[in-house]
Image (tube, rainbow, N blue to C red):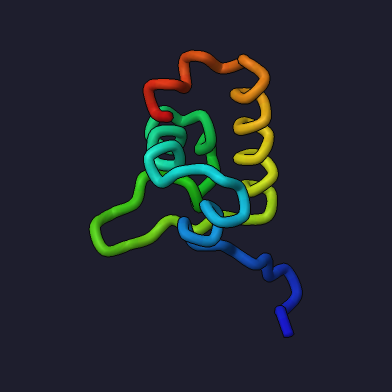
Amino acid sequence: MAGVGHEDTYSTGEVKALTGATSRQLDWWAWTGLMAPGSRSLRPRRPGRHRRYTSSDLLKVRMVIQLRQQGHFAFLEAGG
């Protein structure tokens, strides 16, 4: 049972499976700051450490993917 204030987090592999995003997209969005302004879970990782994503992060990833599919955020294709 999760403790008070504890939020489940997801690995990159889990985020990819749940959203359809690629590792390259997730890395690019974190590197450019699109998904990382102040979110510790998405900051560029240090060697040997893995990024963790929150439920809120999953919603953001899904939103960006939907907007890209609708033709928005064309500048994100560099990371696609």
